[in-house]
Structure formats: structure tokens, C-alpha cells
Amino acid sequence: MSRLGAGIYALCLILFGLISYFAHKLPYFPGDVSASLWLQSIDIPFLEPIMQGVSSWVTASIIVVLLVAGLGIVSRRLEAIFTASLFSIAMLASWLLKLVISRPRPSSELVQLLATSPGTSFPSGHATCAAVFCGFLFYLAPKLVRQPVARGILQSLLVMLILLIGASRIYLGVHWTSDVVGGLFLGGLLFYPAIVLYNKRAS
Image (tube, rainbow, N blue to C red; front, side, top):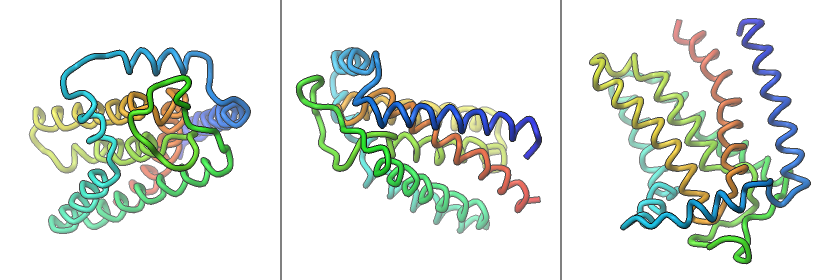
């Protein structure tokens, strides 16, 4: 990790610490309620089942298992190990922070609750895992897909999936926008050192 990279990482860590502190103190941030209500006001056919689907831990777990198995089959064992490890670390880190910060989830008095989720709210575990998992695949895409057009499509889909998963948590009423932003922030903090370590092991 270069000095510049270390400095930027330290700054991001401080910013995340500040966001986490205020998330501990405040049940929601200014703009959280209006953002949730705006997203929930979108009336598109089949939007709710789509949001339920992309927000499913069962679906996510199956995808991760299949991908890790596939990477192992094509002799990408290091990538398989990193993928499985990053997903597990992201889940654990978000769970531990939720216990410490203890921010309550959105209430039915403020937004529609279209799904239920146990535990506390900040940061979004879904957003954290999506950022780490899809971010790592985005980084691996040049190694896994040689055809430029196919690689570009894959990377675009990964970015869209991160955004869609984050939006689904707000739409379903189980997270505030600030929870999702915090999850993406945490995912980035986990992702960067993982890439540094991966490059050292892969070289």
C-alpha cells in the first residue's frame, strides 16, 4: 500500500468512524425519511418481488457458493478463497458493528415496512457484502473475461447489482439511505486492503 493510498484509506476510516458515531446517536439522518418515501412511491409492475428477490440472503448465498465452486473448478483457487473469505468477513464486520452502534430499524410510523429483518440497522449488511463481493468480481473481470465487450457488460451488471441491492433495502423499509451508504463505505474499507493482499499473493 503506497503512502498516498494509506493516507486516503486513513481519511476514509476517520469519515466512516464519524458517520458511525452519529448513526449511534441519531435514529436516522436528515433526508433519510424523504428518500425512503420517494423510493417507495415508485409504481412499477413487479418492482416489489424484484426487490425482495435481490434482497434475499438465500439467493446471495447460492450465488456465492456456485461462484466459489466455479472458480475452484477452473483452477482459480486463490480467487475462490478470497471471494469466500471477503464475503464472510463482510458479514461478520457488519454484524459486529450493528451490535456496537445499535441503531433501530425504520418504523412503520415513518415508512412502509414491506419486509422484516431482525437486529439493528447500521450499517447495511447487504450493502457491505454487495460492495465487497461485486467489487472483487469487478476487479477480477479482466483476469476472468478476455473479451472486452463481455467484460464491460459483466462489470456494468456488477455495478448495477450493488446499486439495486442497496436500493432494495431502502425500498423494503428495512434500512435508511444512510445505513446503505455506511454499508458501501464499510465494504470499500474491507475491499481495498483485500486487493493489496491479493496482489501480493498473486504475484
